[in-house]
Structure formats: C-alpha cells, structure tokens
Length: 388
Figure 1 (cartoon, rainbow, N blue to C red):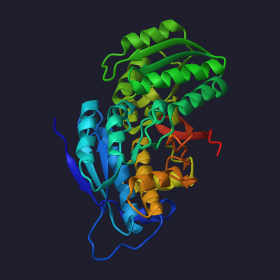
Figure 2 (cartoon, rainbow, N blue to C red):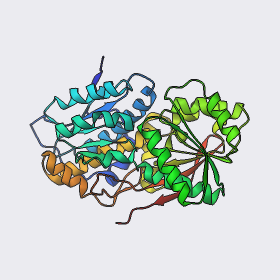
Figure 3 (cartoon, one colour):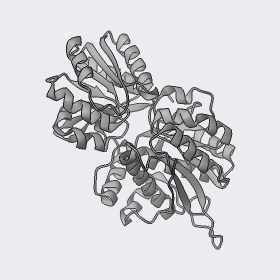
Figure 4 (cartoon, one colour):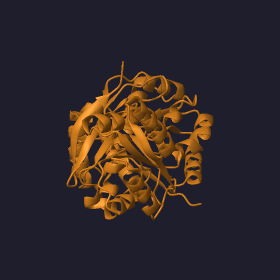
C-alpha cells in the first residue's frame, strides 16, 4: 500500500484568520533562535472514496494551524502538522498511524472521522500512549478503556436521542424505517436510534442495513415502501452512498420525511443528491448559525476555501485548537500531562459546540437540528445533554 506524507506549518490561510484566533487560542510569543516546532500527526483519506472528506478535514486543520501559529504557537514554537494517507480503508488507516507513531517527536495525533477506522487503529493508539483526537461517533470508542482517545464530535447515543425526539415530537411521526451502514458506525447508530424510539413510544417498521459503497439501493427503497413507514431515520457512513440512495428514493416515489445523521448535510452529499435532499432534516454536529464560534469558523473557512464548511472540517479545526490549548496548559509535551489537560477542558467554545470533556474522553454532548431548504442548510435548534 502507498501512503502520502505532507507537512504543514500554516501560511496557506488568508489574513481573515486573525479575526478567529482569539476565541480559540491564547496568544504567546515564539521562542527565539531554536527553529523547533511542536509536531502533531494526522491520519486522513487522500485517496479512495473518502478523498473529498479528507480534503475538507485537512482544510479545517490548516485553518486552525494558521490561527494557532498566528497567536504564538505552542510552548513558544510554531505548531506543525504531519499527515499520512489512510486510503479510506481500515488497513490503510492502521499503516498510516503506524508511520506517524514511529516518529518519536510527534506529541499527539488526529485520527479518523470513520468509526470503523478508529476501531482498527485503537490497539496501536493504546500501545503508542499519546493523545489522539478523533471524529468517529460510535459510542463504544470511548468505552473501551483506552485512555488516549478523545472524541471531537458528539457520539451517537446523543444523535439518536435527538433524531428520535425531533421526529416523534416536532414531526409527530411514529412508524419508522431505519436505514444504516452495516459497519461499526451504522450498526451502533441504528441500535441507539431503535432504543430511543422505543422510549419515545414509536415503532420500527423496518431496520435495513446496507454495505458501504453500494451502487444500487433499489431493494432498500422497495423495502421502505413495503414497510408502510411514515418517516426515515438514517446513519450513512459515506456521503456518496447517501447521495445515490437519496436520488433513488425520490425516483421511486418515496416522499416520507427523512431525519438523518450528520452525513445528510455534508457538502459532498448535498452536491451529489441536489433536490433529492430538499426538505430533509439533519442532526448535525456543525451548524454555522448555532453559535458565535461556529459563525466565526464559517466566515474564516468561506474566506479561505471559497465554499461552505461542514463537519468534516469543523471537528479537525476544533481538534487542532484544543490540542494547542491543552499542550500550552500542560506546559510540556509529556503525553500524560497533555491527556490530563484535555480532560480538564471546560467551557471551550469551538466551531462544533462547547467542549466539556468527561472521564471517557467525550468532549461534546449534544447536536444541532437543521433543515435542507432548497439546498440551504437552515439551523433550527441546539439540543445539549451535558450535566456539568
């Protein structure tokens, strides 16, 4: 297998970053004369079906890197980002992380947004013994007793509760079809949604899994029609799968309301599906109008990248800025000190929400409900479950 390694020190982002530096990082002067950097590694898809998502993830991280370095860097040194291509596969992710972990001067890492890849890397993460910020939403990932894994998106125990609450409450729908990937993310999400719907007094008329990178969802759509479900809840891992499903769903005449996990509002899915996703609802960890910090990130991202941000880029932005904050708070690059500083983060306003890390390494505890209004993602409300 082939991997691609790239090193970033910032500098690509425009001057607008200065307007978002202060809410996210503290200012400090660079150490003089050393020329050293504080380095973190990042696993991301440069090739394969997740390459679009990888580009967005890198964009978010680079914008954060620019903000951190503009504000003085980490421990008086510029922060540097070293990347490896995971090829959108589990073996590729393991190899990419192994290559990064072999570099002893890397002090922390950014993992994958794919739960299945984080599961694959987890044994090596435990063995390496350095903090890893990741975006996968399978609740199990922070319940395995691995002290080095820190989640920078809400987990699916929260997304399922929000999907169920909104669908049964605001939409008043009680007969559900649940469509999900058969990977770790999809199965855990579907299980959580089934439990949440049961507590809400709703019924599951159909629980239908599919294999990632499917090209024909006709059997799935026909099963929805035959089930008599009056609403759809979904957990799609890849945006290209969701785009194909959405088009085939509408082509075959299914017009039931649809409340999906975050992939339903990601940029790639919106481009692929177009009008097929109009009037659908998403439970999104990033919504541009959900907070001042989210708006600041959206402004910076649009100015630099010339397109709207989504959660592929917002969580990596937050991961870089929170890691910088934790390392500065720790005052050193000792892994245990950085870990303790991450666990101590309270009230940190990020693009995705307010971070309050619990003992398991979960930083966010709620979701935004959004609606697709003719291609525009409109913020409805934020639902948080954090108890302090």
